[in-house]
Image (tube, one colour):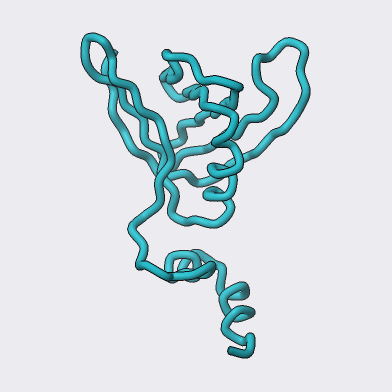
Length: 130
């Protein structure tokens, strides 16, 4: 069934674990602005059918090497968006994270972060000698 959407990420929970029954050992669970939840599971190799869309709970399987990059983006960027789509008879699938548009050279603390409550971190960096 075709679908396409992009939704803002509001919360996340990262897990790293060992399991004798699961085919992965790290995951990130994200809550979206509309109330949906996405479980992103990081495997040694993502399968061809890596996106599963439910009524309000979705599962995405990604290559393990993407875990650190996605975790870093969730820690440092706001707003963050999760986008997923599937279309066509031999489906074209996509699932990924993105940020809002930002200026080149914005640095560690940007206007978006400061407008979302990171003033104390921003003032710490602005107080440092140049």
